[in-house]
Length: 113
Image (cartoon, rainbow, N blue to C red; front, side, top):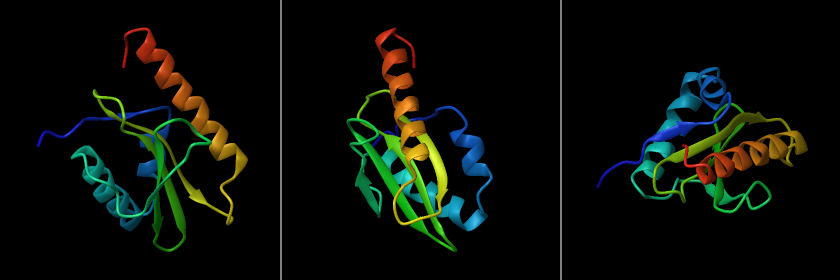
């Protein structure tokens, strides 16, 4: 099966690269599953961010999250990557994910990636 490419939105790629190696490895494994059309090992829908957005959850020396949307045919869009500091996802993280999702939707409507 063909893999969808990953499209990094905003600073998501740099944010991922700033995480500890073991966290990057776990998130990368789950992203590869998503690229292949499978489900990530620990993911849940994030409808507060946008339609079709999911959150990959990794717990390795802390709680880390990655928001992505894979419903579009051309790519898996990684919207936001961050370390979660409290039990509830911070409002600013949700808002940033939502803003980046809206950017993807607007760009697609204009015919761009």
